Length: 372
Ligand code: ATP
Image (cartoon, rainbow, N blue to C red; front, side):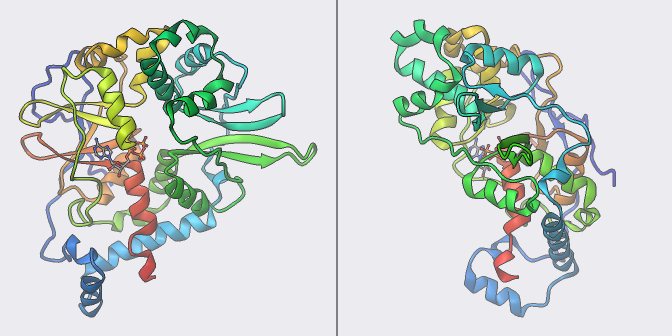
């Protein structure tokens, strides 16, 4: 299938310098005459009524497509997702936080498993949330700023305690277990990535094999499950994503205030809109890493417009879609491009909603599952 119009730009003005290039996925016609409305799925009473109603072809195809994906995830393991050859960067917990930032940036990665060499054991995953915690810590304790050069990765858990956030679970999965389990674990814990930890046959010790992300899993599905073509329902029909209580900012908002928003609502991106709610850009949790590199925590008071203007030239852009876009075309986009999320916009480029990768994974795994 090639129904993705990559490279086309929504028409809205982009006042932000060096703005991401929004890529719109192709729009598809509604097939509302053939399909049940999304509200039909919302309440049990309506669900019962729905069961009495004969399913349309589109409904049946949608169910078959979802079943094919779930069956596939049950027979594949997390090992299967890994490419034949890959690199793994593991950071020692004795490393300085500042150095870890540079290592991530130099290697073009945004997270890494941690290793405690004192106990020779896996010590959790370093992610952008950890750096955001450090930012929050310094924001609350400006006097501690002079200690910044001394903090080690092992102190991250103390920082969590100091700012009162719940410690992230040092969750992991065995790579030989079905991929379906890794997916359900991710959804249960809201982890965006999960380390694969196996036991070394010879030493009997833990061994970090790799890390799998929601994107890798969704791409694995998109590449291997041809039945994703059967998912012809539109985003609005299946109510995919979040539409209400959307957290946004504008180009003049301070970076630190956007970070507070992300922490408060436990979200990893905030659309940047103009006064007419037109989408100009998206501030992502990973942008924080670039902003604080070199320990320049003062930059957090600069505004979002200036901060995003400093994004690297090769920034891939943000992805948008309309409410009429169908799940099959979203999978097509995932197959072709490194999508982090999709911002739902209308014809005027106004913000309608956000579809995160976890929204897609959740729908694919859980929608209607309780009904068999
Ligand atoms: P990631 O995008 O890092 O892969 P994720 O898939 O969990 O992680 P989040 O951005 O953390 O995505 O989204 C978590 C939930 O919050 C999703 O249901 C998503 O629709 C919703 N959401 C995302 N961004 C916003 C926002 N700006 N305002 C309100 N809700 C949002």
